[in-house]
Structure formats: C-alpha cells, structure tokens
Amino acid sequence: MRFYCVFGLLLTAITVCQAQEILVKDINNLPGAIQNENFTPFPYLACDGFAYFTIHDELGYELWRTDGTSQGTRRVKDINKGSQDAMGNLLVGGCVNGKLLFNAVDKAHGAELWVSDGTAEGTGLLKEITPGQLGSSLVLFENNGDKVAFLVQEDTSKSRRSDLWESDGTPEGTKFVKTLSTNVN
Image 1 (cartoon, rainbow, N blue to C red):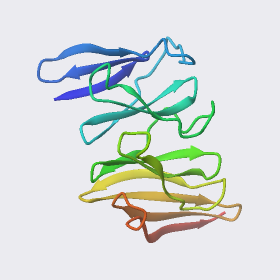
Image 2: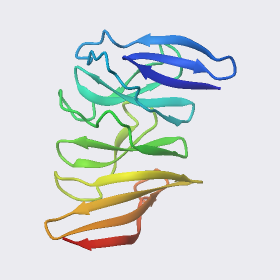
Image 3: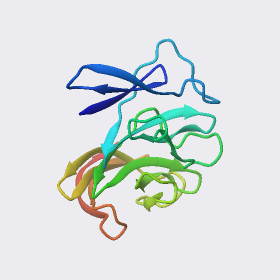
Image 4: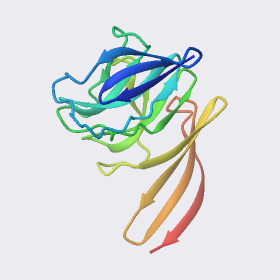
C-alpha cells in the first residue's frame, strides 16, 4: 500500500509496509511553484488507483494526479484558465464510481461541483448548484457507497443555509436531498 505526500513540493510515495520513502517527482522546479521553507504537506484524495492533490504552478492552484511514477504525475487540467487559482491548497471532494468529485472555481460559474476521470477531456463542471459567478460553497464530502454526500452552504445578507446533496458522479444523479439548517442573521 502506498500513501502520497507533498513535502516542500517534492512528491514522495511512502510504501507503508516497508516504511520506505521514495522520490516520485521533483515538482519544486515547475514554473510558478511556490518556494516555501515552512511548507505544510497537502492532503490528497485517493480515487480509482490515483492520488489527487493541488499544486501551485504557473497556472495557479490546479488539480494534479499521480499513479506513483514520475511519468504518471501531472496536472490534470487548467480548470480556471490563465493564472488564477481553480482551488486552494486543500482539495475538497470525494470518489464515486471511479470519478473524483471536487469543488473548483472557474470564471463563468464561480465555485461549483466538478468531476474528473483523471484526464483533461474527462474533467469538467458536473453541476452548477448555485447559478452565477458567485457559485456554491461545497464542504464536507463523504463517500456513501455508490454516492457521495456533501453540504452546500449558502450565505446571504439575511441568512445562512446548509443543504445536503448527493451525487453518483453524473449530472442527472446529482440531487438536492434536504435543507439541514437555516440561520437568520
């Protein structure tokens, strides 16, 4: 079993059974990579044999994946075209039916639910939950068998609402379940 860690922008694979750490790829020398001595390792999400994570490079924070080899470690797609971040340094999402579901930002939709099969062609907006450029605040993804459950938080000047949603990784299978709470400001 392997776990993947990003230390100082050096992607390493740690083989747990053997307690052996090996360098997978030096991503510290990518154009635009953040050089930081006090770097905290980014968590990753495992899905269908790959580890997904975010790295800041010349295109901002974007989605990356690795299969544990140097050749298999790459940016998946420039989601938020140009040098603006598509996500922060923390990848928020879940895995269902071999697809990664995650929160990402683009100029047209703001933050929304995205899906990826690990390829640029198979990565795109899954559902625009809150129409418009402000987008949705998606948090707390939880795998639940053949679906992923997640919360959508909506803040307005008058209230804050938390809605439970679920998805099987398809647009038609991504559905509102119920409102969990509404707080009046």
